[in-house]
Length: 76
Image (cartoon, rainbow, N blue to C red; front, side, top):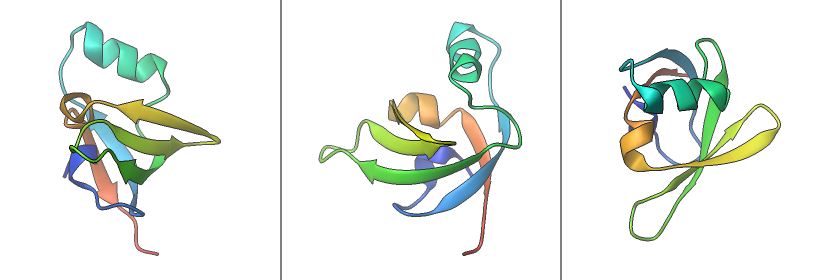
């Protein structure tokens, strides 16, 4: 499952990032690293961008970027 496929309010743990280009590098620089917990906070009305909580801050990602982040969902 990818970060882009989560439902609002759902939490997950990052398992991996797909790709080896500058976009993947930038996602890693923003803190999207294996083992980190993320929560999908909201989706813009037209479906893009997505707002996620990562640690103590909020991050907006394009759906295409979020599709590169492989996650495993957590149970509440």
